[in-house]
Image (tube, rainbow, N blue to C red; front, side, top):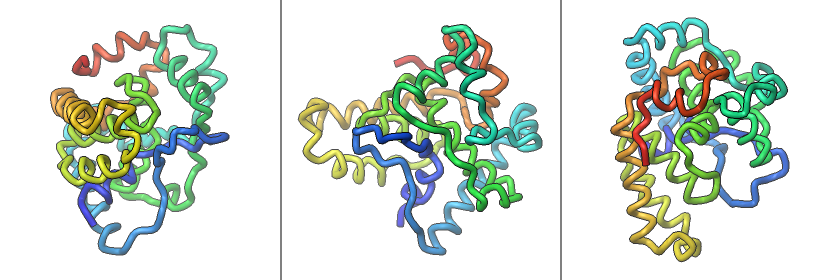
Length: 221
């Protein structure tokens, strides 16, 4: 089992309310003990990196959540149309995604690594809004590659799995060469963007999306 296949489970989130119709994977499945141990190690390392900044330390201390018990989509929807919060609620509604139900495993997890894993899953769709990647098959792979670049994790296993997974859809996205170029661009874009795992997105719900992108120094397309 690869480093990526373990870690990427924590990069996926969202519960389709009625299904997206794209076939894009959103996580799940069992994993061997070895994989779980490796995944915990990766997220423990990421937690240490997050704790190196003031905002990151506050994130780990306060542990905000974006699960179904913690976020009010009605309140976000009521924000001005150009704000991050409104854009996030619109994204969920347009794609018929419901916030994750709180997992008792995660809720009972007290380590920073466990929280970081949950945070990566719960902010997955915030990153769709921030980065502009779609929720179709290619968009889901692009957001994964962006994340891996941003986290400085290897993209090689996902590139191989992703090409096989897209399979018959390659023609829709310009063939293997076109897909490979888009995935590489997503990874490079993530590498060039300052780390986002420690951002407290909840602090910026009320701010214009364009300003939030500038604040986090998002690398443009």
